[in-house]
Image 1 (cartoon, rainbow, N blue to C red):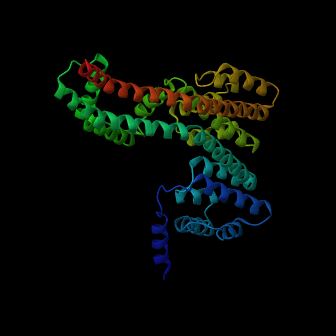
Image 2: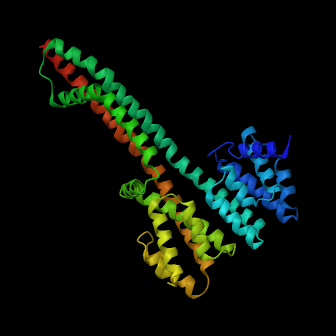
Length: 364
C-alpha cells in the first residue's frame, strides 16, 4: 500500500464511531491507567500501547488504536482524543493544558478522580429515584389499565340497569371516556415533544426556556441546580489544584457544562475577569451563585486560599445533594404509595358504589 493510499485510509478511519463517547466507567479506566503509566516514567506511546492490552469492546479498541496512530503520526494526545469523538471537550482541553505545562500525568489522574466522583454521584442519584420511579410507573400503568378497560366494563353494566349514578362515579366514567377518546393524541403529543427537543436542543432560545422551566419546578429545580453546582466546583477544584489559571479553567468549564444558565454565568465571569474585575465581584455579577458561595470565594481570594475554598464549596454542595437525595428516597416512596393507592381505591369505590345501591334496592 502506497503512502497516498494509507493517508486515504487514515482519513476514513478518523470518522470511525462518530459521536459514540466512551461511558464514564471506561473513561475512568483509560485516564487512570494512563496516569499511572506516565507518572511511572513511561513515554506516551508506550503507555497507550500497554493500555490497549486491557479488556475493551471491539469498537472501543478500534477507537483507541486510532488514537495511538494519531499520536504516532505526531499529533498531541488532546488533539487525538478530540478527533476520536469518544471523549468530552472538558477532558481533552484539560489534557491540552497538561501537555503544554508538563503536568500530563497529574491532569490525567485528576480527570480520573473527577470521573470517579461523578460515577458515585450518578449511583446515588439512581438509587434515590429508581425505586420511586418503578413504583410510579407500575401505578400509572395500573390506573391507565383500569380507566381504559375496567371502568368501561362497569359503565356497560350500569347502562343496562339504567340507575342514577353517584357524582363520583359519573366523574370517573367521564375521565375514562376522555382517556379512551384522546389517548392517541396524547401519545402523539409526547412523541412530538421528544422530536422537538432533539431538533431544537442546540438553539439558544430553546436552551434558555427549557432551563428556566426546570429551575421553576418545586424542589426538583433547586436540586438540579445544586447538582450542577456540585459538578462545577468539583471540576473547578481539580483544575485549580493542577495550577491551571482561573481564566483557562473557566474556559474549560464553559465547554464542559451544557446547562444554559451555568454556561452564561461562566462566560460572564470570564469576560469580567479579563477586564480586571476581582473574582468575587465577577461571581456576584451572576444570579446563579448564592451570597454564601460568593462570600467564601471573597475570603479565599483575600487570603490566597482559593483552592481550599473550592474544596469546601464542592464538599458543601455534594453533601447537600446527598442529603436531599436521601430525603427524596425516604419521603417519595411512601408518598407515592399513599397517593396512588388512594387513586386506585377511589376508582374501585366509585365503581362498586352503584352496585351496592343496586343490591340494596333488590333486597327491598
